[in-house]
Image (cartoon, rainbow, N blue to C red; front, side, top):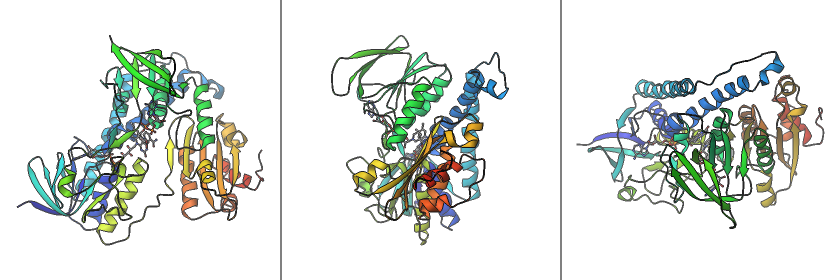
Length: 464
Ligand code: FAD
Ligand code: NAI
């Protein structure tokens, strides 16, 4: 007889492990299947956490090495990079957190089924030759790197994000294919450590999907730091020989080809849902044209008893979106009401400065025919940012012209990722720009720039 659970979650990323823990907290008998050696999925093992560890460490190095601390009376000389120590510290961060999830599984009595799951029916799966059944099955299998046809990832010279988190030495020239989140974050890491970085982007601007002002300012600021951009450009081939790559590029619209010599190439053109090998057809679960599993508002698929969350479903591929869906689906499974507001999901690019966004962009609102008022405030007018010599960027608040309700907030700034939480909360509570403008913000903080941007919606910011 197959062991039976109330809930089996497939995948232990931020979506799956959170769903499993919450379902167990709700009193259900839960198993979570994970094929990796460690829990935490892409995010903890080869995504959010190791990339942020390297972003933090490389920023410390850059500050120490480029002499910028001298202005604050901190003189540094003979600064040396110990890349192995930096990579070890990253691994320690990953281990601490992935072990932490294993501890939480034990604490909450979630059974970890080690191995790959595949469906054998609507309510049954196989893991390494053993059968299990469940009243409900949650698919949280995440996503993996989209390959670029004709470009082979060898994880030595041509790497994906996983390879780029562990390069054994700093490349002289790193060519990044794709000017999205991964390209800019990991490009920043290696640029700070001394690499020349050239980003090849198919579209005419980097960071598709973000607000136009953010895209422009981020390109300007990263260029100022030394990152080179080849926009409206496509890669037509990569040839590797003797540890080096020849990257052939040409204008996206067609034209004369050119070759970029590089000793490392990062392919970061997006991610695609993981559904291969799940034998979804045995359960009757279908995929949409983009290979995703469509779900309803309770995260239910078209098949009774089967649910899906996180990167394998439509929507932004973000850890916090997956986590919130994990909590919500587990609450629905326990007969409670789960809630995720997909209109208010913040997104952050952890470069320096950071770029953060929540709600609609100005272009999206214009295209929808919604009249808006926009308030913008530069960090150059913020006393704390000035004191810290940290004045790059701005806050932009977009409010409905008729009701003043905040419809979007977009920030470029050193603390943008932290500040966006306040904007998300304001939007979740249905705030107007006046609500933010009338909220007392501590002085001197970067957050005052959000208040001033809200005041600027009525043209009445003080410090500009
Ligand atoms: P995943 O985290 O992908 O987890 C799915 C798990 O399922 C995997 O561990 C996989 O091994 C397992 N699995 C798949 N199929 C099976 C099967 N058949 N049987 C058993 N197990 C299976 N997001 C952010 O919000 N902030 C960031 O800063 C951020 N940084 C990132 C940096 C990088 C370099 C990358 C690549 C991604 C980053 N992301 C970030 C995105 C984030 O990692 C994902 O959105 C998030 O991990 C999605 O969670 P998930 O639970 O849906 O899937
Ligand atoms: P992305 O979708 O952010 O960016 C891919 C970029 O590649 C786009 O600008 C696209 O126009 C470009 N592109 C596509 N095909 C191309 C081609 N053939 N040649 C040149 N450019 C091409 O994808 P990315 O950066 O790979 O990240 C994947 C996902 O991981 C993101 O969607 C994001 O959700 C998640 N992520 C989130 C992070 C965060 O929250 N800070 C950090 C890293 C990843």
